Length: 160
Image (cartoon, rainbow, N blue to C red; front, side):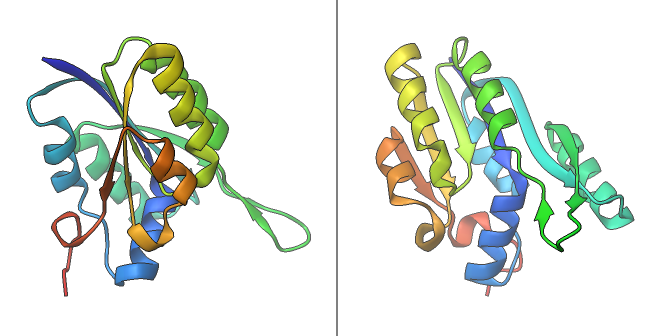
């Protein structure tokens, strides 16, 4: 049985599915699809913590599905810009777990992860599956992945 590790860039998935489809990502369906006939080594959802109750409820849903939820505080800068980026954390965890996983699943369309996908494939011979919204996923990430799975109707809640 293949060993799989899942990494979800929650902010990226939230905003890309909202922008493209005006609805939410179906984490239960994603879990079923990404883990089917596989042994889950680890599953981590990376979230930004704004301290709001609705977000806490969502994070508890992720935990109930099987994800470890990692939180980073939302930072509002004096100039009005905001910071809440998990790229380095996701990369470090993926490099660590990529050594012991046959498959790494990354849910993100962020092109910054193309180097990570390339490294996992070349150094650890790990299969890298990327889930992302087609029109909002970087071409470089799609090309770096072993397999690209578009987030479309079957992976959405409140489908139109």
